[in-house]
Each structure stands twice: as structure tokens, then as C-alpha cells.
Length: 356
Image 1: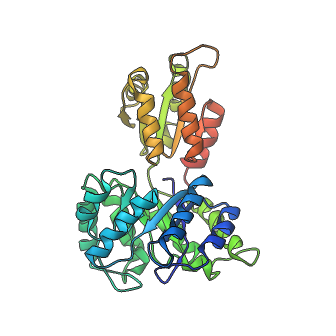
Image 2: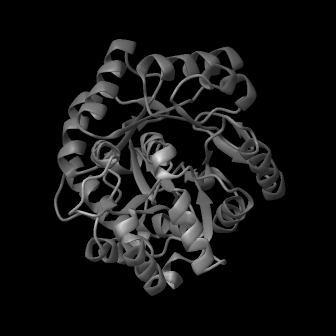
């Protein structure tokens, strides 16, 4: 994620009755991350929502609201049956991950102690942070869903502590109803945030009336807040042999922007950039001709990359042209920005890496 706004078609911990009609407005407003609860509508209608989100090129989320174990495990099975991209919430990570681990759904449980409806996050903050660490250490937990603004205490401080304590993405949820709160989540290092009831009730300042205007307003607020985001970006850097010098030059120019971010490279490119600047955080995959491009494709498909920079040699025939085509297709399908030339990579660096 690169600080994403996740619209929840929910109110009072239930999927809203007119979710299908609201989805039309949401998609028209430009939102790409859309979720709902596992209660409030019949299962077939929830399936229809998930399918429409995917068909429109969006990313789908199901958030658990159950407090008892049987209901929570049923929600996990529902997420699999609905084929949503991400399962948010719940507190029984080991039991749920035993169900989700063999499926493509990404799992983001709640850290801390959760009580009541609407849900409340109980402190102290030290216990919440420790809970976050334990959850993030689990192999089949892909991130965390922190009910930050349902906590009675120093919310910005809690968000920053949790984001600093774990290396996996943290989504902020619960009562985010203003531009100030969106900006606070970005500054804390969140990978994204959810808004539901506040958008439905028109809490955000907008130029026009209506739900679509709320969606556009929150997207604009998100774009401004993104430049204050402290969350590390996950950037793939790759170059064919004929363009490695060009990528090396690009990295030299942007080394300050890349500092602190997570760079993922195929084997030869990773070796070259590690020698260029040992301070860069580089994860090396296989060499491209040994499957590295396919590894990148898998990371795009599972939402583990925020952008791809791939300098290809346009004038030569390559045995791995099909790999580049596959990466490009996946980037388009999953709405991951991809830059194939230095000028586009420059624009990407300005948009994603430079902070206000």
C-alpha cells in the first residue's frame, strides 16, 4: 500500500442496505479500495459486491465484527468464499490464519483488546504495542488493522508507536471523520485508513452534496496527506543489461528520496545497487532469467509493491519480453504504478517518495 483510502460501505458495524447503489457512486467518485462487513446483507448480495469491485479494477475488503470465536471463524470462511482481497479485523489470529493460510486473502487482525459494538480498543498503549508485535510475527498475518480512534488516549502517539514497532503495513480504522485525522494517520506511518459512516453522513467538506462528492473529497484529502506519509514505500527496481547504467544513474540522482524505503530488485540489479550505495535497503530476488520477474509479478498480485520501475531495452529482442509484458499486465490489473523510462520514474519519485 502507499497510503490508501479504503471506503467501507458500512454503518453501525453492518453493511448498509443500499450498498449496491452506493458502490456505483463510489466507483464513479474514483475510489479503488472498497470494503464491507460480513453482516447486514444476504451472502449472495455480498458476493455481488465483491465481484463488482474486482471487475471494476478495485481491491475488496471484508471486515470482521464478531466477538465470539465461532462467528469470527465463520467470517474468515466467508472472506474465502467471497474471494475478497483482504480480511480486516478479528482478534483470534492463530485460529483465523489456520483457515486463511492456504488462500490468497491477505489478513489484517486487530491488535489489542476489543470490546463492544461499536468496537472499542482498550489500553494501555504498551499492551496494544506488544500485541501488535506478537501478531506481526505470525507468518500468515500480512498486516494490522488498528482501531486507533476508538482508543481513549493519545491516539497519534499510539499510531506512531504501533507503526514503528512492526515492519508490516498498518491500516487505521474507526471514527476517522476529518482531514486532520487522515493527516495524522499519514504522519504516524499508516499504510492506509478506513472511512465508513463519516462519508455516508457527509462529515467531510465537499464542493457538492451527495455521497460521490464525499468520496472525491476524501480522495483529495488523501492525496495531500500522502506527501506527509512516513510509511516506507516498497519499490521494485529492475533493469535489462542494456539499461543498468541508466538505472544506476537514476538511483544516484534519487538516492536521498529512496533512503528508508524498501527496494526490491532482481538479482543482478540488486547486486549493482547494493554496491552503489550500501545504505539502501535492498531485498534481492532471483535473477530475472531464473524467475525474478515472476517473483515480482507475485508481489504485485498480492499487494506487496507500491510501484515498479523497470528500465527495459526497447531496441533488442529479449527472451524475457513475455515476463515484462506479464508484469505490465499485472500492474494495470492491480493498479500499481509502473515506470518504464527515467522521465516517468522521475514523476513517480516526486509523487510517491518526496515528503512535504
